[in-house]
Image (cartoon, rainbow, N blue to C red; front, side, top):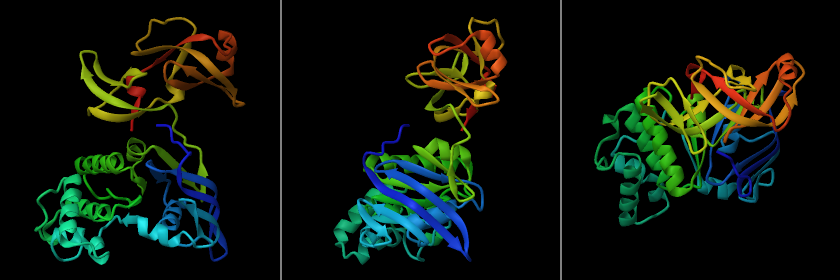
Amino acid sequence: MATSIDDPVYEVFDVTKEFDGKRILSIPHLTFSKGKIYCLYGPNGSGKTTLFEILSLLQRPTHGRIVYNGHEVYPKGEGFSKLRLHTTLVNQNPLLFDTTVERNVDYGLRIRKVSRDERSKKVQECLDVVGLGGFQKRKSRTLSGGESQRVSIARALCISPQVLFLDEFSANIDYENRIGLENIIKNINRRYGTTIIFTTHYMDQAYRLSDNVVHIFKGRTVSAHIRNIFRGTIKKTDRGMVFENDKLTVLVKSPRQGEAVIAVPPEAITVSRDQLSSSMRNCLQGSIRHIIDDGKSVVCRIDTGEVLEVVITKESFREMGLEPGSSVYLYFKASSVEVL
């Protein structure tokens, strides 16, 4: 999905973090738009957790500015109280009080002096959203790990946050429950327009769930190494498993159906001026929009409805006589399509 920056909820300017004189984070500029889902993704020690904790007020930056809804949080602090009031964090291992689910979920409303009737209505609504309607009187200690995480999300949702932070929200949960939590988060985003910022160690989850993946490596944001990423639906047909959206249809190898994100590696695509007799089951026709010489090879951006990047050798590029506007065919195997 394209991410608009016209209506930012967060802006980060020249933010750094140092420990013992060593700089571990250096972010020149980042924008988080209202109503979008973002993932901070990177290996252990990359700085993603540090940035996440700075954004969620668990750490202070050493230098730099952070602006929330037009109010400076750091260094002036004028937006600090607004940010504290309108954001909430769900940890990887949620701490639930040893009481009922209802008393856990309505905690934020009780300390805000909300009436009992209003609390009851909001708890019912939030438990319905996370798929735990009717759990109000259940004791927290009887819940499974997946149920506990859903209760913690319902508790966070109960105060109607503008920004919801999720730290490794599906770690140590099986695949089926992980997908269930992802669907809950997407529903929260769509239903309430909540901006969501999360961390994960699952690359497939990062691309499946978020509008924008912020890759962090050695304390800096870096360009994503995955290209040709598309959102759509996988379904079973008489041709096999097919991924499609309103602009693209390709055959894939996938054990699952439903909403999906795919990536087509640029190096796995064969470019031809003419139609080929090939065992590769995907064939797309398009025209070259841009040509980029990256030194060792040539990158072509080809419009087939969706724009795909392909990487070809300079020799092949010269032999085919390619130029902007050239009509070409793209071939690639169903097995080369990565389902994220």
